[in-house]
Image 1 (spheres, one colour):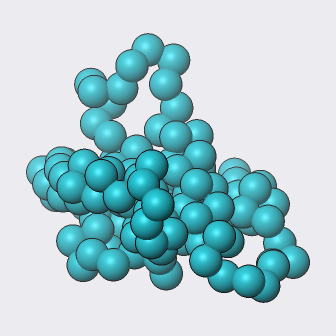
Image 2 (image 1 turned 135 degrees about the horizontal axis):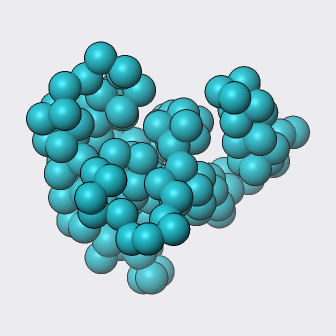
Length: 126
């Protein structure tokens, strides 16, 4: 479900490795080693782009960071999750942050909020 949440903001992603990681996160046939490599790629890009956050900078660059963080959250291996952690929830929050950054750059509003979209995605998934 976390990969589906992240998919709603993938248009903000600037990195091909993160896009591939998203495809792997969506694939139920992906091998564990592929998922691990995809997690590492998304996490590395999120770390690399973290420095853009908190500065007076390009909002879309910050959105790109949060997309990578959403994919990394969705792909986090179970043995690396803290107790009572929910990777889908973490991906949802990161996707909302990406959308908030985009909204700072784009003047027009949307009819459906990201949280509304996520509830629709969750309802379809379940």
